[in-house]
Image (cartoon, rainbow over all chains, first blue to last red; front, top):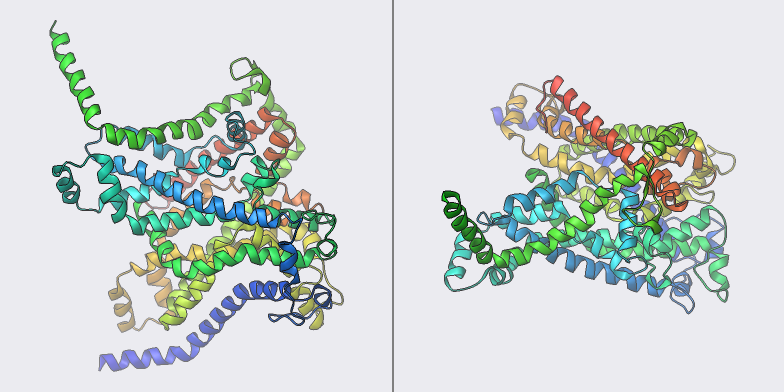
Length: 301
Length: 312
């Protein structure tokens, strides 16, 4: 009887509430995806035709020229792409390894400096020296215009270390005990037991770092502007944006390529897509990890 | 005599323990050194706000000038302009950011089809993962004179000719707020959805039996259920109200809207690094840290006054 009432109850509201709700959510999806698809279509469309307007999500006069000029001679884009990939891969690998190396001793209750090192780490989550002292430090360390300015200053992140440490805490201590009885030292235990068992959390953290590395442009702007070989994809896109907004010409190409100067808008679309595509390809598969990471972090705080 | 015999073995025991844990030390000490260099030395760098810092003189030979830079800062009209823009945009971002992500989470929670819910969620995360450079590129393209928004408005007869959204100083704050909502609403909803999934389903069943409709269930069960999460995040955001960053403003802004786009971080960057006024720029940073500590304490006290748990 009761069950029947519940079902009928639900059905009454399905017509009123859910139709509106589902329509609204459909619009959310459209508003989120349309700009990406529109830019994709324009990046694949002939720039002269694009000016006529009316491009929605399909190209009208299909061409790959907008992408071709990005990677032709004289362009800085191939180099920028390479640097972006390098900093993403190296930054994520070294970052994850460093955070895990630091997390393991902090997870050990018998470690003499567990308390003091942990405090030293946690304080950095709340106070920072700020822009200028940070800049002066990087400069006096001689990291300006060096590739390592992308890697070293961001090597450790207190939040990531804490997430990894709380994951290590869930690993049964008996595993470490038995390895110790077999004569393994702490470094062997870390590499042979802790690291392999931490794979899920390390993947999560690694992805966070990788996305951050791929997306960052300000460190290039601040620290590596002077070295053309260290330019990144995001920084090049930023410059295109900048010059489009001050309506000066796009200067990422040598004089020989007229097309780029003629169609900065099409070039902007193409670079936007090149910078977005890797993210779009990986994120749906990884969202599970991201969500676990963010909720785990929230609980631990 | 007595102390000598009691401390010596103790010190020995300590050294022995250190030797015993040498591998743990090898794993952690390099990173402690890293922390000191990259996190604590910049903190010491705050002293340059009280000096006329000249890099070639080295750290210990600087001239001390007391509060000179702070006085200059508080007399500069540009500082007040930057402060006003920072606070204005922050408040808008806070209000709209919170209401949109809580609202979105509530609505997602009401979707009956789990597949559709997952699909909407997946799509809504996408803009979070792309950089602000890309988002700025997308927003400026959408709003440009030949962009889709203007095309529609003209096609539908709402506008006679395209309107240059990006060149309106009065619209700039709203463009920043809109861009931020587009990028982060879906992502920020995650934490509320997690809080909602922790609500006891029996509460909903009981309400259903009592004849509560859907809106009543949202109002009396879901919202109170996520209250603690909302307040915690609100306190943290209020503490950060002055730390707005400048990425959004820098990337979306242009020369026309510059007076509305200048924020404190940009001011510090332009003067501190652009004009080499390191001490002045550091003074701005110290002012910001001071304000955020005060704001955090106030927000925490307010939450306590309204009968919530303190988070610190």
